[in-house]
Length: 275
Ligand SMILES: Nc1ncnc2c1ncn2[C@@H]1O[C@H](COP(=O)(O)OP(=O)(O)OP(=O)(O)O)[C@@H](O)[C@H]1O
Ligand SMILES: [Mg+2]
Image 1 (cartoon, rainbow, N blue to C red):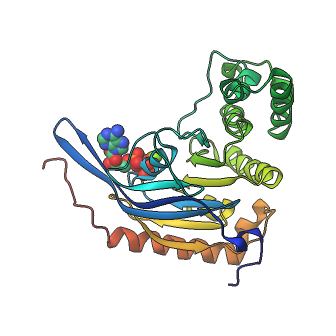
Image 2 (cartoon, helix red, strand yellow):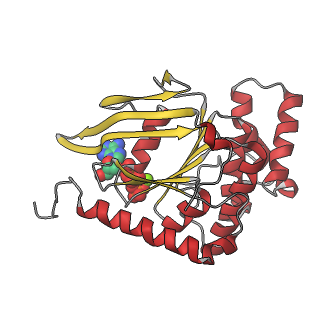
């Protein structure tokens, strides 16, 4: 399939992981999570990473966000080394992370307060994101009074409102039911269409990766490395009906085969509970 010409043709590299290894040492036990992981994220693109559970996807996000440092290798944002927590990266975590002690609008305003955005400007930005994620009527609600899907929208709005250069999403919809998940995928693409942010989205669901991504990178089982990258040729905006098309299903099959190939070529040592 031929890639459509779009803004990604410029291929400006926004963020990069360069030969990243990460080994955790805990209680005399060492776990190698990443091995020589290299990846480029282009400006304004949505790049999805798929990989099996435990292959190091969250670790890769944490290294890129500066939450943990690589054992070797390095990460770049706009060509500059990431050292320590990067104020230019926004993260939507795998677990729900709205602050239960703040109402919806305070949650969304969190990053803006943190970076000293004046109140008038802050209120306008919060209002814009409340509208974008469809929560205008819930600005003063408490998280406990929202559904899981609504709380995820707050997570997304909070990350976006802080205006990060790079948005990192770690299985953002993994805990949602199928219908809410589909709704959130569409919402994510809608918000992206308005804002054009560079996004790196981790998922273990090949269908979600193809629906959201302009490229999909495949990770091997632990220790994780990128073993394949697929360009996704479907133009934006995308409709959920796309998932039923033969082209989409064909790509899904190819991606599943790549994941299976990665599993069988894995360098990971096999461990058994009785070892
Ligand atoms: N802080 C830590 N200390 C020790 N080991 C860790 C730590 N964080 C992650 N690991 C290990 O690193 C490996 C990769 O973990 P990671 O959470 O990155 O995987 P993942 O691909 O995100 O998995 P999942 O799809 O289940 O979320 C796992 O074996 C995990 O046990
Ligand atoms: Mg994870």
